[in-house]
Amino acid sequence: MIYGIIAVISFAVAGIIFFYVGVQYRKKVAEAKTGTAEEKAKSIVEEAHKDAQRLKKDAEIAAKDEMLRKKDEIENEAKQRKRELQDIENRINQRQDLVDKRAAFIEEKENNILKKNEELSKKENELKMAEQREIEELSKISKMSTSDARNELMNKISSEMQVEIANYIKNEQDKAKYEVDKKSKEMLAQAIQRCAADHTSEATVSVVSLPNDDMKGRIIGREGRNIKTIETLTGIDVIIDDTPDVIVLSSFDPIRREVARIAIERLIADGRIHPGKIEEMIEKAKIEVENTIKEEGERALFETGVTNLHPDLIKLLGKLRFRTSYGQNVLNHSIEVSHLSGLLAVELGIDPTIAKRAGLLHDIGKSFDHDVEGTHVSLGVDILRKYKESEQVIYGMEAHHGDTDPKTIEAVLVQAADAVSASRPGARKETVDAYIKRLQKLEEICDSYKGVDKSYAIQAGREVRIIVKPEVVNDANMIIMARDVAKQIENEMTYPGQIKVNVIREMRAVEVAK
Image (cartoon, rainbow, N blue to C red; front, side):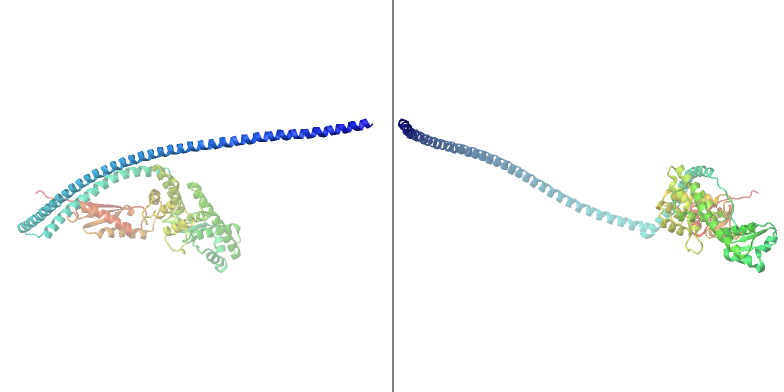
């Protein structure tokens, strides 16, 4: 056991000795390595310092080289700029020399022009003096002053020019008339033959047939109460005379007359005639007439193909069914004018829509009653503008009687179609008194002109012939007279259609052989 303890102690001592020896060895090795690292670090620092010195020298050398290169470039550029400036200066000097030469040349030219102007002024003064001397000499020879000679020359030229102007007007009018008449006749013939319209004169009375004469007494009523009720409620005159089986309704208002006619016919059919029944039938008749007015307006639109018309305008158009102009039904006349305007527009190769619309609405102002003031043209313009009709349609309506100048082709077509529709045989009629007064007015206008021998209104006032005194009116003046008479007739008279003015001058030489 002792040996065992000794052995353990021996091992422990040996371990301690070995540990100490190992520690010392490692210390020496570490010291050796540390010395080597310091030497390497010193050598690396020395190498780095040497490299830095070398790089610094290289950078200084490169910078010097770059400075030298830049200096050379700047010097070369300065030399180039200097040469360019020198060239510019040389060119400027050359141009200055050229400008100086031109200025001298212009100054010389100006001096020459001034000299020539002075010479021209002298010559002009000499010419004026010579002209004045010639005028004085001519005045002495002719024994006339300058103003007298000028007036005589102007009078001579004026008379000659008057003849030439008249001849020129006549020749041009003849040419234009021939071409226009030929073309217009063809177009009107084409339009008229495609538009055949009935012409029945409207009257201011309506006739109601009675089943027997006893019905007259029932219509009159006890002490005339029935007939008084009818006349009071309708505003028409009931005429009961000796004519068998008929009574006559008279009124200038066709709508009232139509209401009375319908009411009386229904009373006759019903058999019960007394004031209460009369009032009931008249109210029903008014409703029926209102419906008829609307249907007539729609019929006019359907026949003419006009669309998108305001309902109020359709109603006004339907009222034209109960309006007349010189005995011609205004609604039928408007439909005919619409057809003719559209056909003429097609013949001219333009869109007929505006022409037909303006033709249909051209007499819309006649639908108003007498309590609305204004001409049918002005009323028509106002109502069409109120319902936003186009300006082309308004122009066509406004110019159809020549109150204003036509502004569009459609306005001219409506004017022509209106004249054609109104002047057809049997289309219109007028009273004998109005007819005679119109003829007398025509002859009075013609007789008022100097040199007129006699004048005659012929062809129912469609033509007037003026016979002039040949010793007073020459060929040139008669042409001007015809135009003046036509203008005066247009301004002072109202008439349907057109009036042709013929001026006749005849010179006869008569001798008797014995």
